[in-house]
Image (tube, rainbow, N blue to C red):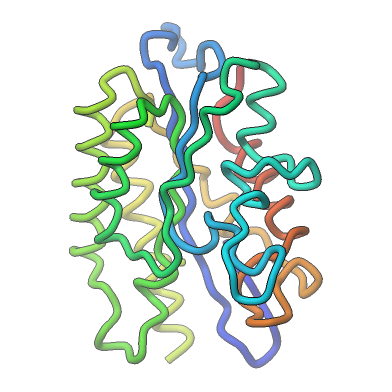
Length: 232
């Protein structure tokens, strides 16, 4: 995902979605019936931070698990096709989280028996106090692999972002996400950089920090990422 404001960092993030059950995948690799539960893994963007209040989480407007009709999150889009998912929406993301937090969040998703998981991570790994403290590509990939390993083991039927250098680090993160999800198998899908390639306008970004998507930004993120994911 790219957030742009003249004079500010053009931030890019990786976004991937995973869903299950793999047993419902047909020979052509198409997705089966809509899932009956959803969990969100990631950082403040998945928490809807700044989408409805000054420097506060707003999970109701999360592109992933939110219940605000104006956002039309993944959860609401799936619920329209499978009412069984109602009440089984879990936001395990944490504002400030980095890739290193993904294994722990994966443990939560496993304990919740999540059948559909969204993962959006990388902003806090790249946006640090200096270039030297950015998460290394190797460490980022290691954390993602560890998290996916937990999902794959714990949910066996699951399918489970100076300026130019920082931007390149997140491009590298996106590459690692794509490769990690490909290694997971056909039950895990990368969005093909659909969110990365979208140029967010200023009216889709919080005016408090010009970083987090506002309600309009969460809505477009939900649309882009859901469309680029699985279909039922």
